[in-house]
Length: 96
Image (tube, rainbow, N blue to C red):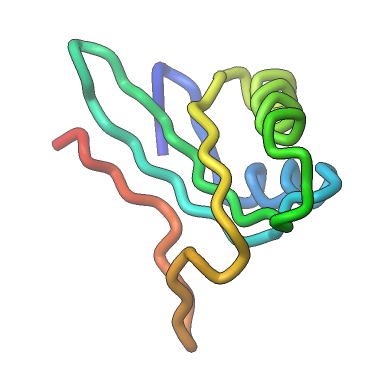
């Protein structure tokens, strides 16, 4: 997908999250167009005992460093994101 002129691949997000301690490999991306700007929200499953504020900042910084875009990070408890037996849909583009 392309957001704010930056190409983003799911493999980049998976690689980034695997490097961040406390973040699960389960994630979802929502892309919206609000007030004339594209907004990328990244939902990530985390351990409930993790320091959520520090983890949010770490994911944002790593995303900016590796991909070149600062997302809005929302942390959720493990098991909150939907799962399916087959390939799950992780990216939702609500711009169009």
